[in-house]
Image 1 (cartoon, rainbow, N blue to C red):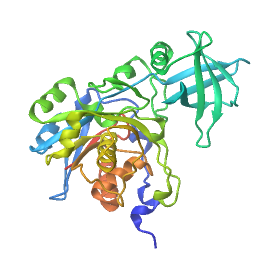
Image 2: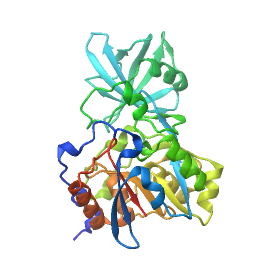
Image 3: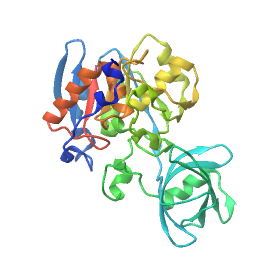
Image 4: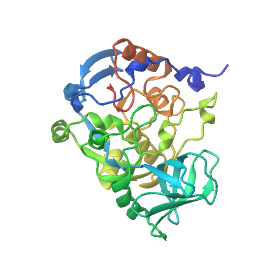
Length: 341
């Protein structure tokens, strides 16, 4: 009999549709906060504005300072047929990994505003497509592409938010400390911090930032019956010397978000300061360095809920999620938060 922690079904749950947050709380720090203390096995229900009183005094905080790009683009084929494209990540030789809604084949040309076009050069088995972007018929480097995308693109709201993006999303779906462009999904645990709260906590605690550019793979559910058979997606990351010093110290670490956790733990295992991180954390592959976790409530059978279980185990994860549903917490990117200490 397979261990419960390796079964996909162990991470499934039924979520009432009204608990899927389609917009943020009135203010970033007015969201709910579920605090789970592993030492005492106690659950506390609070609001995010009060998080400071729950953060252990002796720990350092590490944040993800990635910045979400306007990765959702609308295009037309030469025939006039409409397409929707989501940028995933840059590839070598000025090629870009994307996802496309609509039928395309190798050689299909897509037309955008601002004299931007893209040619499909490869269809990948995982459903992504590889394209070359051109502007006025000249191949565009990724940094130049981002400047054009900022003008014509849309905020890439997650697929479970069933509405069009609006102007408010441009700021709401971005952390107050977002700095380095490249993500196509927000590091959602970070969205709860106001400038004031972030500054207040950073004055009290050692802290620094990693960069991990979150890709569309973060929303891909685990489909394998045995979770370790899941092909984990990879995402570009960078770690600063200051963060490296924190990791190499004996200080306790609180990671703000699953992306930060995976980046720190990838470094611990590889000692690489930049590159592509593809670490899959779950109860059979637990964190080796990160002590505490701040996160949101995640999709059923996702690698994200499995990462939560790597801290507390499957049964406790099921219990915490059941409590969150019972207490009407809001789930997913614009939803409420959980702190594991």
